[in-house]
Image 1 (cartoon, helix red, strand yellow):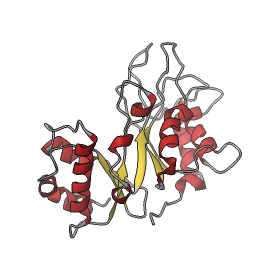
Image 2 (tube, helix red, strand yellow):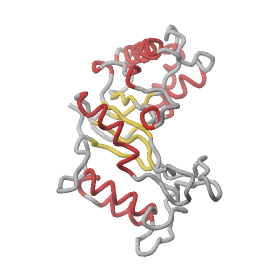
Image 3 (tube, one colour):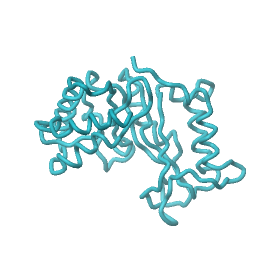
Image 4 (cartoon, one colour):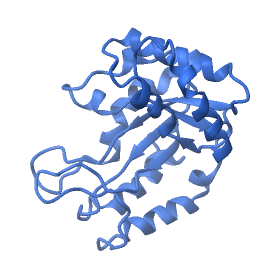
Length: 244
């Protein structure tokens, strides 16, 4: 999203929020025709204007989403945008969290279905992260039939994980499970974002986890940074996805 476009949308936020059923929500705005988005934009709506009114029921969330969608879609001179519904996979992978399915705003109000999920350790055993398929499988199974392109909105692996659970192995699994071929598992995933930043997750053993791409190889693998460079050079991952 261009700086001018961001300013236009930002200036419209107070009016958009008015009457939004007193519910907060999380959206990511995707530039039409390009897999580039600004996740802070409508988070700002929730954080600044609706912080006291967290949605507790699906209909509250859906009403808020549909209200903001209608305001943005019908406003000028706001730029064209596509809407990415982006729950956290913990709602599907962990019984302690709420299943996001009932919060789906409806096909007429969503262009992409996404999810955030990280390669966290499944048990108290050190260096035992779950791997990419375990992160996305439940989400993919539930939403692949909704008729929308799917996006991994955020993912990452700790820079301290040792081979074969290291960052490079995790990133290379994107290629083996998403690209066409014998091992393809997720043909419906059309976009992915790696969270190249320090994290707040603390593994059972050791210090704070950092998802930042590591420059240090984990033999026999290459570094996480180099694996991402290779991923970016892959024609399948560098192609634009045009939203019809």
